[in-house]
Length: 85
Image 1: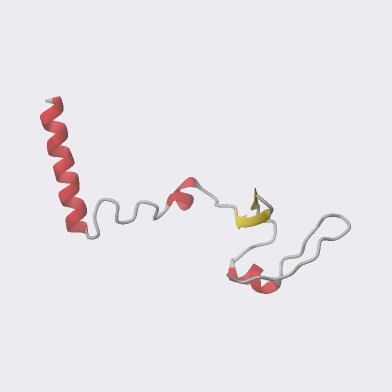
Image 2: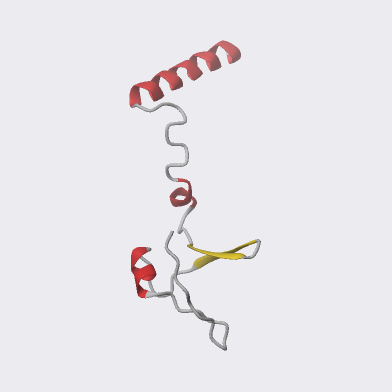
């Protein structure tokens, strides 16, 4: 984790260092999410959609390869057919 010391202006504003701005690919006017956790402030780029936010969150849940995923889906479909038909 990189740490940088910044200063709060008299108008309660902060300036993000250029290296942070570039590293995160931020753009002028982009919104950031501010979270307060205990005595810490966390700034994160606000996602533009729930799809973007959740992308990859279920990686490897149903299998590590397409064959494993297909086998899982097949098994679930068979179980559904037995229960409901």
